[in-house]
Structures are given as structure tokens and as C-alpha cells.
Length: 294
Image (tube, rainbow, N blue to C red; front, side):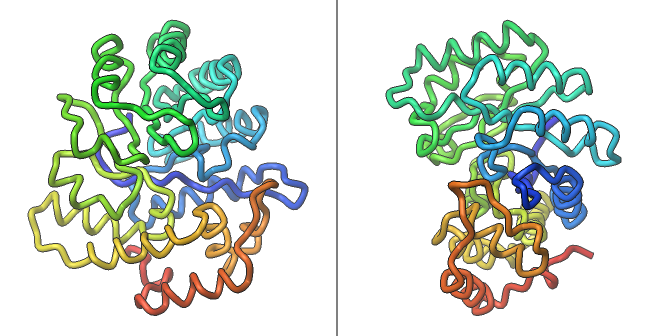
């Protein structure tokens, strides 16, 4: 079960024919966890979830089910189809995965609270034991969760709606619900959010900043002096200057060619942009190898 902590929205790694490289994807998530993360979430937006086919997602689920880190692996659904979303959830339940990051269907403009409510209501009706982390990302879904609407969902489905990933950043400062997990989608907001009573972060860039983010989290929990937060924020803000998926794959591809494949229309950064990213990180004295937890 997802609890307080630092989580990654982990990358999906592809073969040259654009099929999902299941083994490499799992190994990458495992490495991030071993370097400090509390867990990894497959098939979030950074995991190209809307572009990856259902069979590939099921194949990965069947493989992580027997992995030694399975209790630290979680799933996004990443589909505009309600029936495909339910198909994936029910398949994952066969392997005892019950926690899901679920964003309302994207693409259509003008999503309404009534329609989004019906979307989650139907999922809960079909899978009564599901635990849902709402995904608040208006930029992608064309829907903005408000504190009032989240409270309604939690009131009506208290055993099912257990938290929210806030990538629109309109909730983490204002939403107060007992025993409800709030994760801002950027580690740049981690310390502030912890001070406000939030649960941690679910972030794409924690795949890179895992040890820094974990240090900030642990020092807060231990009430110790913060020494890494400024650097953590600076690294995150550097990645934010680029498309995150492109930047992360370009960054990792410097050491591992398997990250060079992205499902079209996604592409890597240009060589100029990649050099700019790496230089900015170098100027911050940020080195991935030095960031590995002991």
C-alpha cells in the first residue's frame, strides 16, 4: 500500500521496434528504489502511459508480481478508455496489485465534475476494493481537481480514494483531509509540502534526484537541519526547462543507449538542448554517480 514517501513516475524503456522492454523498465525502477526511493509507479505520464498498448502493460504486471521489490511497485492506468482501464485494473488485481494512480480521461476538452465523478464512481463500483491516487494534472487531462471536489470523492468513497498526486499545484497548500495522502508532483515543492503536512512526492525527476529527495525527506522526518534542499530544487528546475520525458530519456541515454527510443510523437532533446541540460547540471555540481545512495 502506498504510504508517505518519495516515489518516481518511472520511465518506460522501449526496444528499437517501439515494443516495451519489460526487463529494462523493471530494472531501471528497481535501481531507483535501491538508490533511495520508497517506490516506483509504472505507466504514469512520464512512462508514456497513453501511448503504450494494454498487452505490454499486462506483460509487465505479470513480471513484477514475482519481483523481490513488488511491494514497492505501483501502477498507473494511463488510458482514455474506461473499459480498458477496468480491464487493466482487474488483471492487476489477479496479482494482488490494488493501488492505482488514475487520471481522468484526457483529450476531450471541457471535462466536468459530474462526468469525472461518474468515471471514478464506475471504477469503484466495478472494483470495490481498489485504492486510488487521483492524478491532478490539468495540462494533460483538461480537468482541474478542486479541494471541494476531492473532498466529495473522499466522502463518498472513503475506502477507495486514498490520495492525490498534485501536478497542477492548486491542492497541496489548501487540501486538508484526515488520513489522506497528498503528493505534489515536483520535488521542488517537497520540503514546503512536508511542512504543510503532505505525504512526500510522486515525481518524474526523482529518477535522477532519488538520493537528494530522500535526504530532504529523511532530514525532515528526523527534524534535522536541511542541507540538500536548495540543490534538489535547482536540479528539478533545470529539468523543468525542457520537456520532461525528452529530457529524462536524453539524460539517461548518455550512459545507456536503451533510453534513446521514444514512442512517436515523443522525441529526444536535440544535441544542443542535451548539451545545455548537462552543462546546467554540471554547473550545479550535480553528478548522477555521486548521487547514488550508499
